[in-house]
Length: 324
Length: 242
Image (cartoon, rainbow over the protein chains, first blue to last red):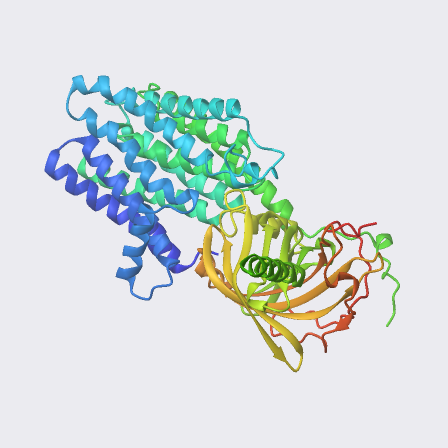
């Protein structure tokens, strides 16, 4: 199901772009936040556009990539909004680079960006109060405005909580452990999404994992000294956005429980838990990997159940004794 | 003299308008006797077929001036059915139709022309087809298969058409290597005439006809004979339901 092109454009390309961008940014600025921002954002965008370029039908790779990039400026499907959401959520991190005074502006911006993520993806769903079917009176399961408001508030609060937890881990020891765990969460999340009924969204999560891998490798080689907690916003934007997309748009594919398990897993990977002793590292790893494993196992179990061919009871078949 | 001329003019205009309204017949599509089938290549080894189970539509047939005819249909995209639940869920998802975002498939005619062929009347319907949130112009040759009264007395016309479209033109580009880009679409439907309150028009005078031979289109043609006027309606489009 995964072709060579998928691997090259959705895994190798984002990993290489992320590593090169991170190395360049680190050499220029010696700032971990700038390096992680540049690495992850450019790495993810290259993979997202690379995968989109496959479907343009254009033979020239250059023209196909231009078309894929242009698609992000005129989003059509919900997932086309991911680059915009990513860039928007990276902005408060950039503002923070201008010193402590900018913190006053950063948190309202973070809140607005988190609210935008929830609103933008929810508003494209058929149950949104202004959707085509609801307007035509053909959708009995339409959400009320109160439900929509509560959902957006809940999504924004979760994103902000993850943001706050990961920012608190800045300058904490053992960044390599956080980086590895975060890569595992992204990889597990990609497998879970692909098993849940959408290769497209699973592949985009794979792009995020590859970009993280590229950044992690570059950070290790260049001794950057910080993990993804240096600039967690784009990471949270992509992971949160894709999980929300999967929950909303894969019919019966991803449950709220699975999303909650993934959020818990990411929180454990990124947050400022102590990491100085072996048992602490073990505890954090367990707190991260156990919910991740449960979420993936749930998806794998559902997938296996749908792939098995049910046995036909002999008595139920009227053709059992049929002879030509 | 002037007042007589004015009166004459008014009468002529009124008659013309009346004649126009008489010859244009409005129909509601009968979902129970409507089939929308699609077929697509699987790995280039076989064709997999599916259908859409929920739709509604209407059309206006103007026999004197076919160009004034109009057709429209709207399909619930989530009602697709390929006889495999898991595949249907996948097809409804973001990899293909993304029905939680793009809920309907619609067709609205923009021009109609009539062609008399040795196999009967063929209406070439050009219009805007919207699928997966993208609108493209398509032309569907609709052959009138037959018309006449059903068992409950309502007047029906029936059509058949097939066309091939490319799903990539509608932004559905996933798995093009495995699941074919070209999709054969076949539609066959009956419409129930919505009689005017005055009961005017040709409703009471029309004679059931048969348009000709069995449909043999190049699409997902089921290939079965369809006899005009053989009505076993149990649907809900018109007032002829049981």
